[in-house]
Image (cartoon, rainbow, N blue to C red; front, side):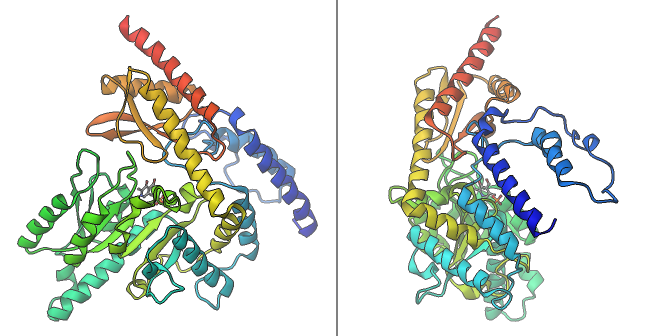
Length: 457
Ligand code: PLP
């Protein structure tokens, strides 16, 4: 493909993408396939001779699309959203064209500098304390990670390093391995699995803090565990708080937990992977109160802020704590271009409108559920996630979800809350409107009607 063909094919691809997204709701949201479907559809080996572009494009519809779960369908309500917008997509094309590996300032000054400034812009949108903003007198700053999992791991490794140095400053004879064997990290029993994985990779112990009946960590529970561990000769060094847990979007009590972590010399990291985007709205910003006590904070603009995957924003209070290991890979893509395009084309007001609209849709769905006495709401609806279930057994709810999945008209995933099987309904696609919510609910109630009829016979 030379430049002339690229111009032609590139424009065709833009049309294909726009058609795909404009008509996405006509496609079944979830594939109807068995695992292993793809291998038989393509050759066993790469072609020896070049193939034509036409042949490849034909295979996109034949091989790929049948196996796609359409995350940007307005009928997709599973997991948490994956952000998508046209400004981010065109910026990504430019990122591909520049194709730099921005591992140092000299390797591509614009890549390094735009990232720092975009993290400042975003930090200011969230009203982060000045100490996290690079272009101030503070000693902090932001960096783009690929995922929240990487941000958690980076924070844990930085905290581990700091804890080892602190212990050795008092007792120089203690070996690093001896100290590591005594370090304990903590997180909520509702935390994402990536937090536990960070401790596994960091080779430190991690304890799960039981949550209250709103699925949130409170100070007393953490304090009790920290005291027990200190009495046993262990060294508490890290706590990962969650704002917006994956199962139910619960919020740990930062204003209680933060001072405790500071008193105990424990690094506090905040994982707000999904919920963080909402904090750009003044009405949701109080959920972030207590961030001033944190050593690091992270959320995913690639979940809910219209910046396509991957773009996970992380800030630290002390750059010096993570210098030398800002990230796991050496190479970095020019991801801040996506933020720059999106922030400028939507403006803060446009981004806030997106969040508010999706929260309102979740509230709309919540009202539909509450109005139907066969169902119950299982956790407070704060942002764009509704946890609900049929009153009755776990088996009944499992069967309902099985039928929903099989119908392929809408897509949801479950979670466990207090041992109960719960359906999660997350507002995901940018194109989801009220009529999609109404239709989704109609579909759920129709399947429920059939299920309960059968159960009563
Ligand atoms: N933390 C929370 C609270 C999440 O909900 C998720 C994913 O949904 C993650 C972390 C993992 O995010 P990532 O895929 O960016 O690592």
